[in-house]
Length: 226
Image 1 (cartoon, helix red, strand yellow):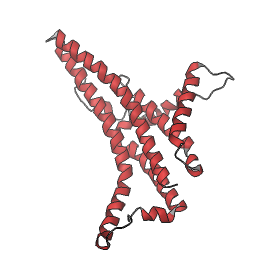
Image 2 (cartoon, one colour):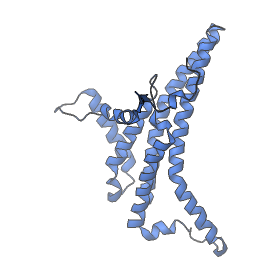
Image 3 (tube, one colour):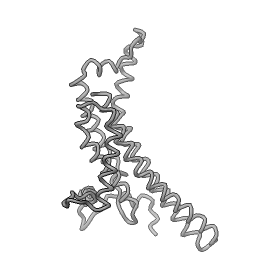
Image 4 (tube, helix red, strand yellow):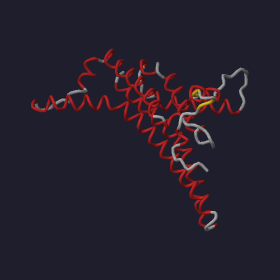
């Protein structure tokens, strides 16, 4: 067993060349375009789930916000599929890389902010200074609101990275403990193995929840700017 806790987070290579691009593109193969008049059960379930999520997430948006529905649905499908594939043995999870998560969060956040300044300039500027602010506190509040605005994409990326990384590390530690305890106490090893199974089930839920939370926060940022 590999004793390096962070070995699973190293960018995979083949013949010395990074293959992270192929890993990132692989989840798109899990959602094939329907080519038949009547879809099978898997495709029908995927379409039902996408319609349900889209309806729940886009209800709060006006017409301009609903134009982002395709991008938001593609985002949640990509993050969810990537997180789930990362739970397979000897696999690589791109969402454990802060650089990749920032690469998703920053452009989406910047798009919502630019949309807000373009369509609701006065309302967007008003967010920097709450109504009724005392005059001596105006400079400080403007600085605080500006910092909080620029922290939003960082918080998005760090939240996703931390949750996925913590789950993988915990599974690695408990799995290693289970193997080590097999030669010491079979009963203790069995209990640890049950805990590992329960944690794996929890990680499946966390993988989907984090994809939903990431997309939902982007959707809320969009709602505030449209």
